[in-house]
Image 1 (cartoon, one colour):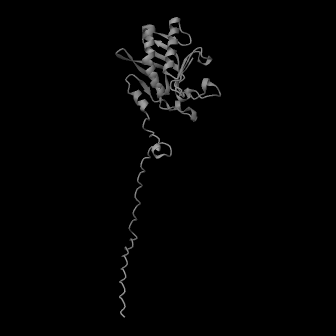
Image 2: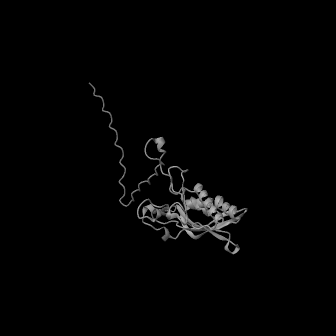
Image 3: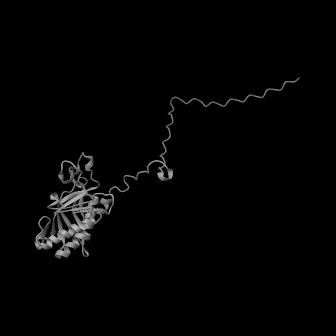
Length: 250
C-alpha cells in the first residue's frame, strides 16, 4: 500500500532586518484637528458650540471710530483696573466728542470732562444726540447743542453709592450722568441749561423734554424729582431687562 506524499510546508515570511542603532526613530504623525462640533439640536446632545470669541470682539469700537467727528480713545488702564468681578466693562472707550449732523454739515457735541463708558452705551448716546437731543435744542432755542457737562461714567460701586444692595450700572460702564447742556458757543451768546436749576420756564420744559426722549432711547432715565440721589442730574443707563421694551423713567 502506497503512502501519500506529505504536503510541502510553507516557507516562513522573511523577517525585516534590525534597525541600525544610529538611525533616528520616526516621529509620530501630528494629530489631526478635530472636526468642528455640529449643532447640538441635530446631534441631540450637549450644549451648542460657542461662537468664536473674536467674531464680534471690537465691532462696536470699529463702527464708532469709523464715524468722522467722533473723538474717542482707549481709556487709561488705571481707570478700568479692578479685581471685582462685578465691575467688568465691555469694550471700554473714553469719549471726548460725538458727531452729529448740523443740516448738511458735520458737527460734534463735546463731553466735558471726557468720560469712560462701554462702547454699547456710547453708540446709544450717539444715536440719541443726533436723533433727539440736537433737534430739541434747535426747536427750543434755535441753536445747536455744543457740549454736555457729564460725570459718573464707569465707576465700581453700588447703586446710589450705598454700602449694600445691587451693583450700579456705572460699575459696568453702562450708565452716564448729565449735569448740564451747553447751547451754542459762549463767545456767540451761548448759555448752559443746568439740570438742577433751569433758568425759566423754557429751559425747564427743555429739560423735561430731554427726559421724555431719554425714556425711549435708554432702559432707565432718572432726574430731579425721582429721588434725592438724582436731584442735580439726568441719569441714563442701558440696564438689561427681561423685555427689551421695558423702561424705568422718573
